[in-house]
Length: 296
Image 1 (cartoon, rainbow, N blue to C red):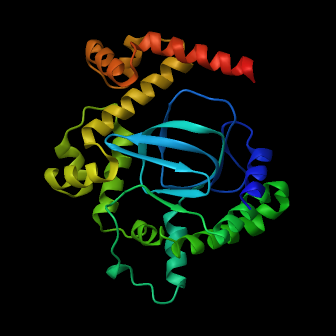
Image 2: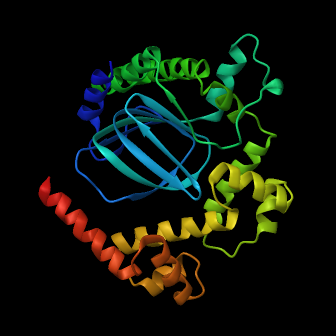
């Protein structure tokens, strides 16, 4: 069954990371080695069909491989290394209202009594045959575009139903709750993403999350593997690297654009994160991308 799903992804993955005509479905298809890559995760379920990938976020790390699925509940900057190729995965971007509506339809669901792991924790579990079958039919809708509108939401609902009966179920239920530490951490993470170029303080972020600074720090680090201000710095460095790679600009201009007052501090933190000064790192990445393009 995994082979059928991998073949469907291979047919429709135009680039290594592709949005599709099916709402909330992304495909990841990678055949050639690439350097460790910065990604900004969002709330999602990632179904790994072939290959394996290791990811690091602050002090947290995890590895997922063929036949496994990963649940991530919040916006999170990570660095991922694709360890085994070819790599194929289908990604379901989670929609809170859709999941909440499904829970309301299920008899005996009492979200008030639910317990589960730390807020925002990245959870992995094996895919069941029923989940593989549903995800395969979801991806194969791309073979028959006229079927997407009438069937995509129904198959997505089936996938979510199967997930609620899996080891990911308790954490998915927590994802729908509004007044929890997990929800407040998600609010803080989204707000930092929207304001990361600005000067921020832990007090300001805590006020947004309706938590005390100490409580926010504890829950935020448990969820993301880093403090709120380190989270902000990681976002700044990711965006700086992206701008240096894709734009005709200088390290000084990029440093200012992502919120650094001191170019010296930017250079120091960039080198600590990526191993080279900004200009040299961008040149190295361009060379490796060019080599990969020639190899393809």
